[in-house]
View 1: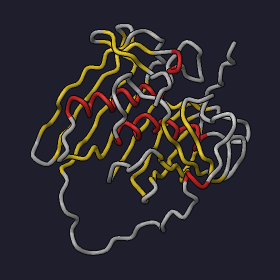
View 2: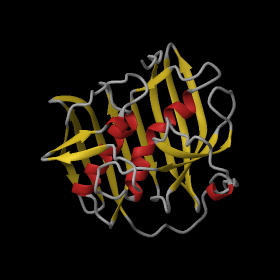
View 3: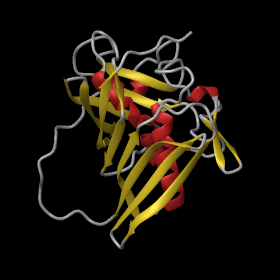
View 4: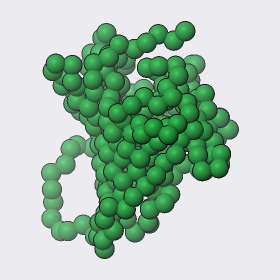
Length: 259
């Protein structure tokens, strides 16, 4: 992975690189790097191989600019079977987002059978031709589209893979791969035949296991909007099967054209 990372480390701060810019304002960060960095710091400082990060909820209440970022964390609960960690995203000295992560101790499944959706039968990423030029906001991530596309109405499915480190010098972990990609649930679920006109204010990830491999599958499962408030949801997969869900709330907003 040789592409420029989204952040570089300078002392106690993370400095965004130009690759971290978002679509709504050319001088602001992409939501994916906000959620990704909050999740990464929670895992780095409080992760435990005996626990799975079963839920990460990120509130994004201010578009941060490209100022240096500090992430602070706080232990809310550290029990034998459950941990709850809070984190705050501080950009240029101003709070721009926060996260709560619930980590649950791994154990054995109980006996019995429970209903679950049918298997996800789709082509593997290696069986889908790579687009030219590389997809994902000009190379922010890689995509292999399965069904549907932006600008159309209908259920969409795709594979996503990261093409750069979140923080320079720190390899992506399975959990960080999910955290940094999960913001994609909003444009994927909320874009229609008029394009994307909703900006998400949060994203929540639920995982019953962490992904294996580089590719994460996204399948839109829900969208609804009333009075300019939208909800969207996607089911998440890896090449072995389902891993969880990602959902978001969003507000109606026009995208500012890039100069």
